[in-house]
Length: 238
Image 1 (cartoon, rainbow, N blue to C red):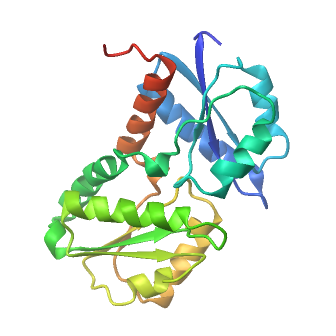
Image 2 (cartoon, rainbow, N blue to C red):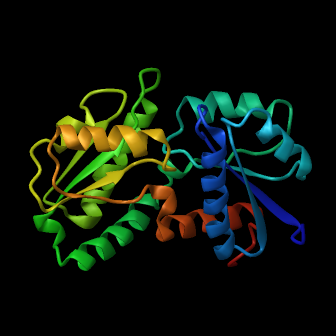
């Protein structure tokens, strides 16, 4: 470990098959690392049994934890602190509630629209989110994100749908025309993104394009890198 500063990227992972999700998260950490060479970025999912604790024990107690989650829901406010136990690591605000996330995503959407020769005002956007039966926070975060994104990007319409609550993703996408995009409001491409969202879009006869998850967007990984740098080296930039 050549750098004296470290940060740990934590995501939910895939309990049924932890290894691929662990590898995907490590790749996102590498993308973030490229934007923040001053800090060594590590990664671990909650789903790999005991792995988070192994990584934490290898790192300085001052290492901040960045939750690659779309809200400050149960996993960030309960599961993650419980896994940290008595360790002194600070938990940074999760990606999904970052006030600059809508701007970072709007930047990517602008490029995606230009690549298709589309204008936002003629395009419908479906935000496919997780939702929750145990906390309002995930849905609140998704709707706030969508509202802020609409202010910035000016789509013809933005509909938000959920995997685990109403309205469903299928309902949100059902009446979209062919000039439409679906944005998975997910940090990583796990089972919901690979299976549930495509099934819902098929059910809705959705004819638009599906975009990558937030954690794979270069503008978002650059934002995360900036937050990690600000947290780890508070004097950076003045």
